[in-house]
Image (cartoon, rainbow, N blue to C red; front, side, top):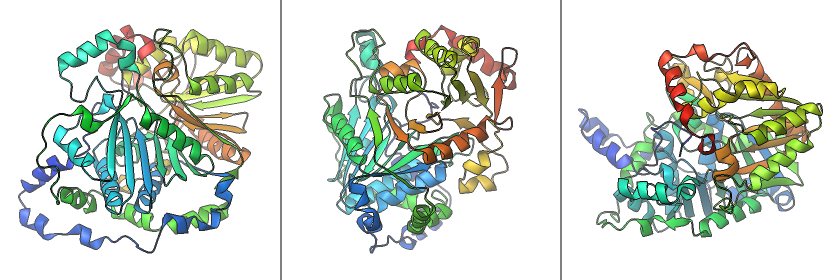
Length: 516
């Protein structure tokens, strides 16, 4: 079971309890106690999500508004504002919900929304949950917050013997993870795409950040996303966290149990004031977006999600799924061009033949993936590295992302980045396709066997020349030499990394590609 992320990414939903202890041990206790950062932050009580969407409420009944969220900071701002002004419900489904700055800020917004009476449902995959039991119970103790864990048995509440038993007796089941990433607010606004909830997805990390892509949906298609979420929520694979944890928790119902979280999130050292300012200004920004035409209204936006459990379990580690079938169909129907961005490029004979058939009928295919220097996953790169020449032989063009891509400061807009004396490494995490310049796919699907057969995935298929033109413009920029290396039969940039990383990559070649 290879998780596509750094090992430090964990779901300690309430790490703020630990952080508060550390802060209390600081030398300047009096200064900390004297500063009430939250008193300086006020929510606009005159704003509601319904009011802000009033001018598009009618068109939302029959059409879907589509807006691509390219930069991390902008995607963070959109999520925060929607949570701040949600009126009824917030439904969240993520593979990773880390508890670094971004994760704690997200928790703060969710608790504050719950305090206003907003009903919050959260589903997170078990494989990445590494939380303190008391902390998880504290979070779910709020009367308006319910947390479910998808496909438990390999992590939460299990000792090492239980974990080994699960993997050895149900290897396929243990490897079937939920990779979906959706945020649904009031059943009518959706953000989905490649980003998990962690610093590096929103330009907040000091060392390593992702080039990623999300998509904002307003109106009609939201109902399809909501249905998918409900399917996962009601699935027997999703278990209420309280049913998985049998330990006593005598302190989780204290009235002040969330105070330290709020103090942490209000502190400008943790949540940059520039970002809060952008959140405040989002309504004006949204009006400008609508005026510019960047928000495109479409009759038919297709949201495709795999079902819980993915497939019938009758084909070993294979079997496919809804998202896999739709992507195969799109590639088979391509007429002129396919442009792809994927962080992990692990192909099988089936996918190699699929690309070759497309090339043979005149389709030009370009794929941008991570280089060894930019990847966060040497296991995945190792498998890709083994088949790299085979892929070139199909006739496709391969590009590998540079960790020092020239455009990173254009896209990586985190306000702190400008103040650093170094520039964080930039890795690719976007999972996108543009086909024939008219069809755009944005979602969670990596081009690897795990996404194809094991992980549940979701994608949005948008048939719009305007949306496709905008996404393709970004891709074209990233294909340039200053942002990526073009791979040939005689050149690759593997030598750009240390001998130790190359050795680690070589040692991973024993892993079967089916689980990568």
